[in-house]
Image (cartoon, rainbow, N blue to C red; front, top):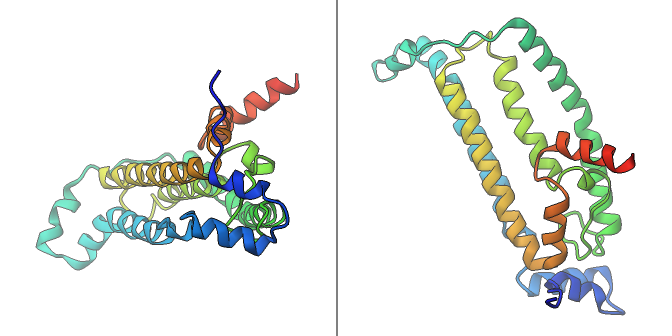
Amino acid sequence: MGTKKEGLATEIAKKEGLTPEERKEELVTAGLDFHKIPEIPWLVVIWVIWGILCLLPVIAEISHLEALSFALNLYVIKIPMWVVWIAVALLGALMLFLPVLRSRIWRFRTKKGGCDDDHHTVVLIKEGLYKIVRHPEYTFYLWLFILLSIVFSPLWHFTVLTVIADILVIISIELLAKQEEAFNIRKWGDEYRQYMKEVPRFNFILSLWNLRKGKK
């Protein structure tokens, strides 16, 4: 069997006598500064593109711009109201869960990450929400966009542009997650590769099912 390949963060975590701040400094020095992942700009761009595509038919209707007239001729997909109300309920539950999500992620990263920091960690966290999905925050954003497009479908024209907008969101968040995973493999090596095999990226339903079967 091959030797288990450890990541840079694991090596830093094993060093004795380092303060949390010193561990953080070593991470940054080793080129593992989490802030170099363009997460916020990327999410802002996603929001803008998604909003423009979803609202384009309405903008065309209000502005009467000839260049946007094509958006008025697109087939409008009628979402059944019972689907809309289910989406409203799920969106409400998601927004109520948001403070809990942020609090738990902050607590796990800060208290158990080894650096007393929300973003910089040397210990791979596999508890709580991270036991269900590898990317709790990205999973939240993924469902937020999709549910919003359904909830507001009675107010705007749900067309192929809306479908394209949701698909672009899924692809963009998938790419963002893969970028973070490549970063985490550098940090934790084979430990993170094993974690990827055990916990789905976004599929919390599959994960909860597997956890339920494991308990039995």
